View 1 (cartoon, rainbow, N blue to C red):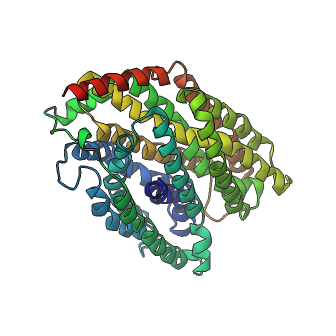
View 2 (cartoon, rainbow, N blue to C red):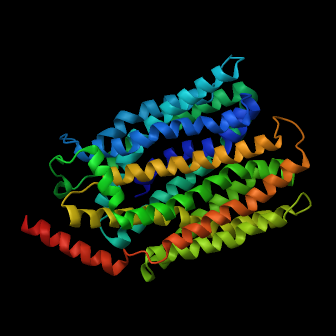
View 3 (tube, rainbow, N blue to C red):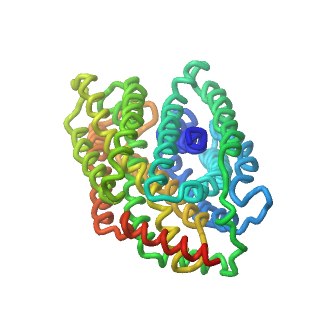
Length: 439
């Protein structure tokens, strides 16, 4: 399970470094793009993902290779993943904003496509490797722990760039090193993962468009999609804002990496506790509790300022991390039940398409958060490497304290009355096992 979790370690290393450091810092402060263009770079890739992520899910659902329908893609996508990540951090010698934007948007699209080839089959494999209600939570917890270590790696990219001399050259060397770091673990993920023979079916006769229509017609999945999307936007909005919050509101930029290291360490420490707590309650109930916990502590960021002691900020991060862990963990642990429900109703397993949609939403949320934040700050007069106006500083403060909380509250509302409880899933599994036995 730990080795399987390395897959999300690599994906989160890439995605979090892009949301934490790339658009809001590297593109604006190092590459020199305007805030609006920097925020637009990931949105261009998301427009491509809207088609490729569900399509990759469909392709893996229909793959009939002897070596498997999911695992071969781990070997196909590993090298392109590493190379495209390294290309993102190259400071191209273009004076034109349009030319720079075209390069970075193109490199971002290549990276996003490589992530799609890897992560959609990877996540689609999870409900096949773990078939029970609680066993999926367990495997997702290990996967989530891997993703949190990926955050550790992501927040280290700026210090690593400084070790290489800083500036454009330092980031280029750090990007190349990280490219190797995100590519190699997929060899081990391929080795330890497995596919169940009884889950292998013949290719579906339903077309891709009709498959998507059926997926979104699943009202349970639509509800899950909504609560996940708003929770994910809250997470990625914090990712985009915190580096600006520490730099321009608190005035201690160097505390950002320390804060994030403590925060993610506490997320990882809280996971075993949530895992022991999980068998006592339904997943949606735990999600609601964790969301409210995080929202309550997130409001405290409004009251911190340059005079706030470091230990208070770090203590806040430690407590907020407990709720954050659940918002990140539970929705992915709930996808498998929606797939099982769909199989009971349709007779087909479509893990690939379901996880393709979820993967797209994961990336879309980050792109939307970064674009909205940077565009709004751009309108208020945010400038590269300059002393920010009081209006911009106050905007960073208010956005950090309020927008994630609003998204979390919407997510909680959508999670209420979620129908796929533990008892409902046990009944679905029993019916599916009877059908497979008869077949």
